[in-house]
Image: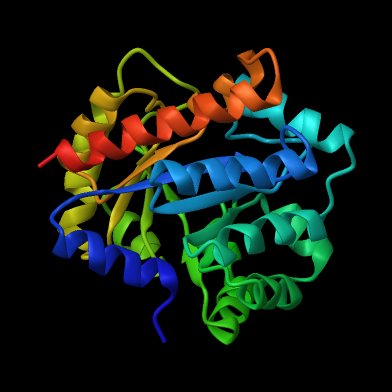
Length: 267
């Protein structure tokens, strides 16, 4: 059975545009504040939401997301809070996934975690540090729960390895647009279009590009060649820089509206 994420990409492809995917760590800026951020995303016109599972050793996250995750962890955000944030998003009618490192999945219980994602309306899980060679238990669990497995492909992924990884993906393939950690940048890496072109040679799955998008123009540019545009640090910066929660939420909604226009202008 297709997930909400599968259906979203069928819809946006029919509309000849990319999807806007927004990221926020669970429990940031607070447990209740996170739910308000999710609502601001939806009100601003986001297509899908990625809920981050805050983790103490985030290899792929840049300083902005690390700062947000640290703040979340200091407030005691737990696995059940992550699932609660996921449900907040899916109850609002958007496709939603969780992004997590492998350790929290193992701690929770591999089968139980996959099932909990499905039980809370989630479409799947992005696992940045899980290799396909170490995925046997995860493949079984996600197949059983009927959720999408989303792996991260980097510019360093070899041509020989690319079809092996993409074959195990569902929902979309996460193309990390550059080597390095997350964060907003003045320009999205020029390696991103090349990576997307390489993936398209071996897979028909939608491809979403993450790492670096923060403006309407950048969203428009990425939407020209990718199926999904993932934005995280730019939203977190708005919340970290705001004098208070309310103005931060207003800024998040405004940025979402701008980026939503950008993804619609890409083609």
